[in-house]
Length: 146
Image 1: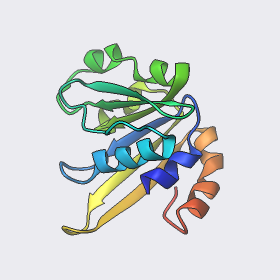
Image 2: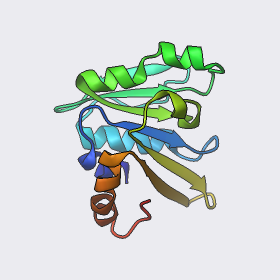
Image 3: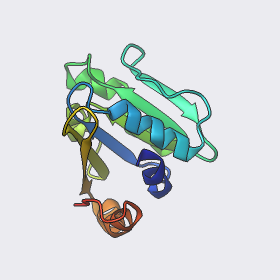
């Protein structure tokens, strides 16, 4: 699903990934990386905080905020600014950055249904994503798009 979703992304896009530990945030990010043409493995950047990887035409700036507690620490990462320069930002534990990334982003909420299944909800924020939700729903074959 992340690989298909990547086809809707453009420079400056911010994707906030939410879900409990083990829900599949990094797996989704890996799919997005594949869709963007990232050839190196996409792994959780828990200890490096942000890992940037080059795709075919866009860079993917993959952040993990799990270990961060303050808005100042998160702001220091300059996630939105990195995305604006040359790519997209995927932010695990994105709820921590929601008030810091501006008004234009999409939230991807992953919930564990059982050991093998996940529920993914997309929540569009801002005019750019609001207009892309119809395309998102079509691309994901009727998946929930808000």
